[in-house]
Length: 119
Image (cartoon, rainbow, N blue to C red; front, top):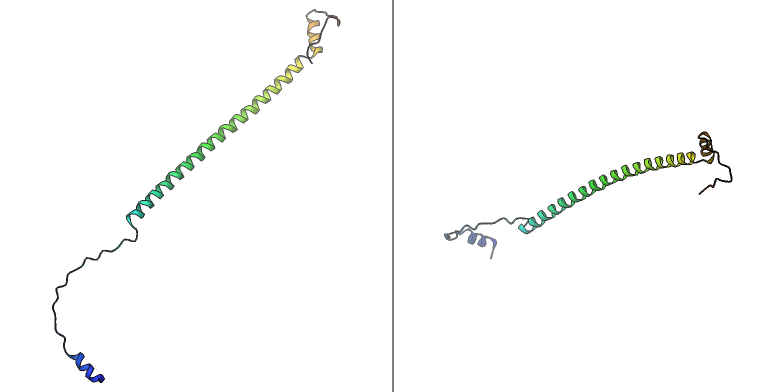
């Protein structure tokens, strides 16, 4: 068969057939499914709650550190006061001072009658 004969066959008009075409509704598939959306929402909520928990814990730690620093400074102040008072007590309990006050009051003790307690 030659090329020409083939063309003539093709050139014949095909029979027209009428077919009823039914429209098929084409649904676009979502790229993200409902389950994935739910999982993503749960994940975001968990991350948000975790972030809030971490921040609140850090705030509590910060406040506790401030309280600790205040307590340490008050302890240092009290230790200084205690040190000053103990030095003052040592100064006031010197035997020479006690002898001088006793002599001013008219007491005269012999060295044989005086006992020194604790040192």
